[in-house]
Image (cartoon, rainbow, N blue to C red; front, side):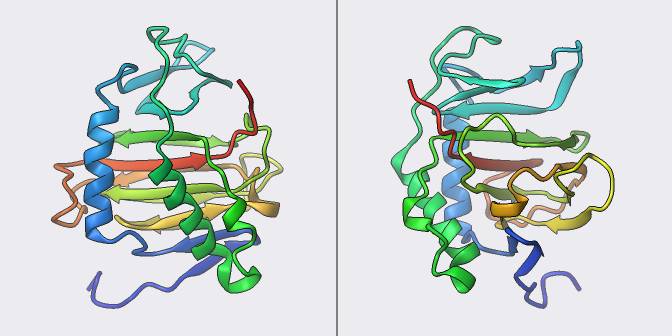
Length: 222
């Protein structure tokens, strides 16, 4: 009976908020079209190589700043040396609206107007892709991370800042969902243990898989 009843907005942990169905179908299609353009380069969508020799199953393209384990740079030195695409102003506006939506009810927007994301990681998951428990820890800024989901649903595991183990909470993220984590939850470990292939609703522009667009304020200069 999924989809017949509205899913409630949930505070998963202090500073971590899940807002179901936040993106309209039109906004989802716009993001999918933009992601297809970004994936063409100059730095293409790629599987990130890890220092230990492994390769991430998720494919990623970056905007504003290029992320590689475990630092940011303006050029994709681990791919082709090209400068990454700039971070678009309309995406920053969407990020501010997301922070206001997540925190506005409790704290008057919790500084949403000052939120200035300058990097995006666009992650594409096919049905077999996973993301291990990790921290978003390379940013000098403590501003919230904004996560937008489009396409197939997934299990999003949100843990604690002390380590990769329990306690954690498993959250079902579906197409159009917003998840924001900041404040005391900003450095919490989190990951995606499973994707649910074939669960994307019609009309998103996705033919399969899951897109996750994460916005960050790096606090970096240069």
